[in-house]
Image (cartoon, rainbow, N blue to C red; front, side):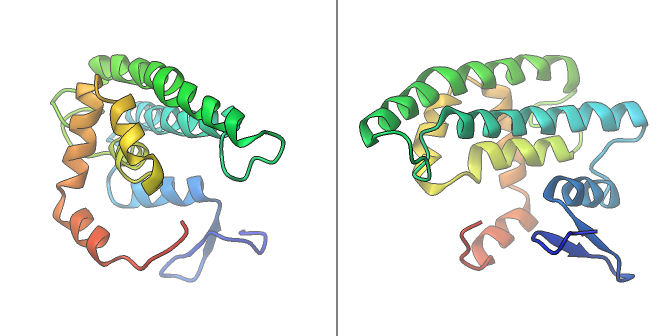
Length: 170
């Protein structure tokens, strides 16, 4: 099911699962991070997809080092626009939505960790090292989002993995 490309997850019974988001959702369900009902799951998935929308919008903005049809000056200006205007606006909308879904500070849905929380943490804290400071500045007014990211970062398992994980371009 992986079409001969990464990423791929091999389950304990030998089945292969491809596609990063399918793997994420499978693991989230398996480890109880998708809520208790189909409606919970849909809302949690929605939060994670909002985070993906932010990442996709950054790519579409066109300031990456892989962008070929723009000068460095143009890319620098687009990067500035992204981190000063576009990203804060998108994060603000997600922040606002948490007032409807969160029951407790530090959680995007209900009062326990979810896949949505992990997606928020990845967006704000596990981004490229070169983007960490700009992302922090772009999200500085997002108290609820930062509380969620901090809650995930403080998880002992996450902390341990971050200190032990191998160097990777991913």
